[in-house]
Length: 312
Image (cartoon, rainbow, N blue to C red; front, top):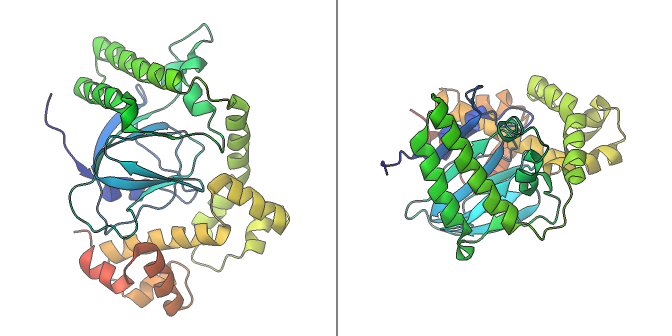
């Protein structure tokens, strides 16, 4: 097969995450499916996010931690993570691990409509059950020792070879490969007792938070308290905090800090603003507190980040 082109995961993914924490992928509307091959750099941090597409994440080399909601999965080379559209997640560098060797992953993105649109019998939903029944007990990680990730990686590479989907034959081939992948997953998760209703409940909860995420995009530079956030949604503070943690896997304060620090990373890497100016621009009134939060999340000071990780 052709040589693979490896992209920097941070540079591709992070700029596409909006205030809602949604990673928006630029699919071809006529065929919403894509394959990417990423490399990870310990210097960069991708915040918790979700997406409207379904994702298969195959760790081709190295070690990473896959955090999905409030669960953490230690991934080794050859493991596969299965991630639906309602799960907030991120990929992190293992604690205390030195930045040695390459960390690479192959990902397959697709919108469920690609499968649903091809079936008229109602059986299409069966292909998607491994994504639709992801409750709090769902085992997202499939280890390499099962042999399934290797089979799926081979099909991902075959899928990549057939892209772009600009002919009838290519589209037919790509859908066939995708269904082969999904059948492997359906068989693997056959004994899991999750239900589609759990997916639907999570989707409704995400929709309930949508006005707050719009508010944050417009007002993150200003002070935003838990009380303010609850008021935007017309909820009590206690109800709001439970709902927000259920949906995102994070407290509101932690989510807001991650969101502001992600904005700060971009400004530090792409502008000549000073650390103090960046701190103020992303909503931190106290530069010392900004530095403390930044270092706790990125494992270096804002000035070190500006010097070492600036995107040129």
